[in-house]
Length: 219
Image (cartoon, rainbow, N blue to C red):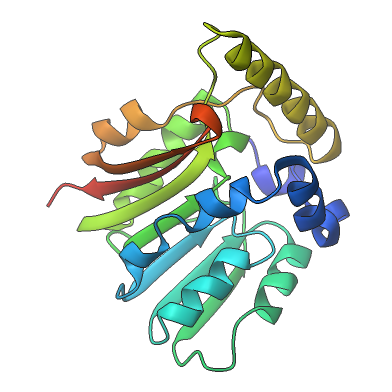
């Protein structure tokens, strides 16, 4: 498996990432990112994968003030930005880990929530097959996995064709600038089902281009 942290770097535009996001998508990604936040307001042990600049972490620590959070990201600059966003009212514990998620030794059943927003779309199906197996094993039975991500368009309407073209441009940009390995969005649904997780909640945005999902691990 490829060493993700060495081949991918979001450091070069970490400080301008939110500006770029809002310029291209306005507030749509923000809505998808926070759509299911309330469902983990009482969770105790939470794993954030590819958290980026900490906008989700900031909201999470504002409504869930006593939880234990592990933030796993390959970018030291992104982790630094995330640290700055934690409110002083937060009374729990946060572990910031600069790690390669593809080789990280996930402990079995260590978390009751996993969050991976706009992160899984960076990987090919081959990488995701192994990665989702490892991540699902670190989730408690009955635990939740929150995912906000893009969806590959169906190409059956003019709108979906335009969405397809927009996604391809986006992937070219992130492959060139950040070195991500994926060329398209790979749906994790079948892989998650194979590891005992089922979709319990789904909210669509931008005519189906984005989805915010909750998966539950079978008890």
